[in-house]
Length: 85
Image (tube, rainbow, N blue to C red; front, side, top):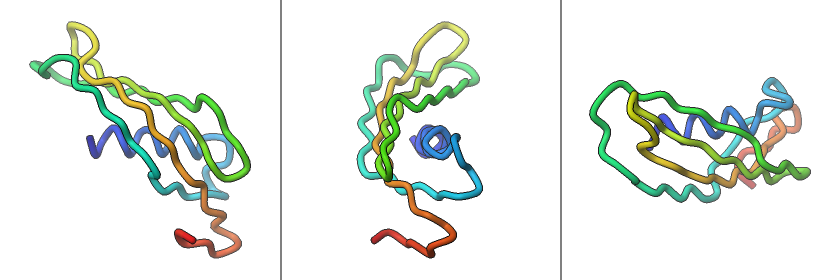
């Protein structure tokens, strides 16, 4: 789940990665199958507002989907020194 959270937060910041950091607000994970091989994680931004971003992602093994997740992230402006307010 840590790797999934990291990937989704990268997707949340993808429009301006040097301007924002991201804090997880909500991460819902549905375990669909057990992982039996190497995993590939894909994350995408579904909707981005001014400071809240919604992302979806999937963790797959060589055989198919292992984990599906949806995350909500708050973007923090690095230049303004926002730290989780």
